[in-house]
Image 1 (cartoon, one colour):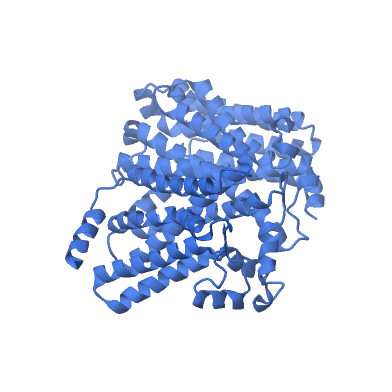
Image 2 (image 1 turned 120 degrees about the vertical axis):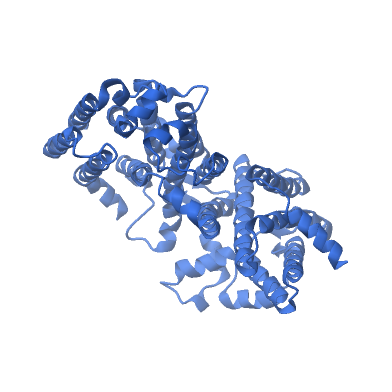
Length: 555
């Protein structure tokens, strides 16, 4: 019997599962779970926002659970990650059945499945009594069956792999610990959030319920739907945790490729993308200080979810940029073999197929993180991704046309700035974004972004991509870009009607122009100095013009 089971396990482990196959299979299981949950409840009594929130929290919860258990098994068994991922995917069929079991077991007496909210003493008691004595609320009959089967199956799998009973029991126990912590996760987070003010043994279940079920008032976001509040708050948490777990998994199992990718992500651009979201939020706080829910005077629990919104949105922007990098590098491979030979694809440290898999991972993650904040933010990040696609890839490949290419890149960056801004106006009304800022940023980015093309002149000309440097040559391109940057600094003083910025703008604008003309500064390094000065100017602008109002709101 064991030999036959071993044969079945070997077949599952060695199946040539691609990332695309895995994604389809995993989200098919998530869809079946969601279908079961909503069908047994008759699809009644829930808003559309609840359906979206519950679908997202289910997907993120199980993705995070999958990654945690996969990382544990990889460390515990030291086996092939491909084999473990295949086997664990089959094991996730268990997630389909809890809603059905609850419906059968509870009948007309409805079971409410969510989390366990309890004190530390209560959680310890629940741990040793397999989630406590009330299976109709919190950790229900169906979930308990799911957890029990998961523990038994993983313990059995460990035994099949090692033939050691003690290690098998240890594997099952560790799985139970992981699933128990996940099932009571809000309580553990509450211990962390309240511990500076309150001793952990004194924290009760109602403290956790108060944090996670209190009506949402986060910037201009409002929600009083009790059924959806927990979904919204947990989505903000699970989005970041899933991203962190995926990064840890990639680092643990593919170190050489991880560092090759990390060196190629253009860290200056990462800072720009995250900074645009935060700067946009700062401008929103200036115009709508009444909706600034992040306060210096408040405690960590009061600020926690406001900080999570900013973190999710900034990370969504960064992941959108990374997706654009992976797509662009795949399409520009022949150019990079001429002008960027150290990039992972050009030096063959990573295959094109692997890079496209990374593109899809970060494409989806950026949208998920944005959706955790709200549907409008999802649309803005999606628009950024669409611009990135038509800019880089065929059949359009609009990067071939100089002014249009720069304008599209500028528009994509402005969308990120707007995503931070619309956190503040009521209803996330994009029409409240000041037109003068829109056009100032469009002009400034359109004239300055061709800096990145200075290093690619030879490859771009060979591939008929007519950037400003490819058209005019390095010397004239440096002059035209530098002049455009100086004019942008000047316009910022006039359009913002901020006389206090005159001298900083003239000095930094002139210094940027000089840097652009100095050929001792490599085309691969000139953008670092120019954007460094831009960061300094933005900080000065924020401090001199906007900070007095924002500071009042923060207090």
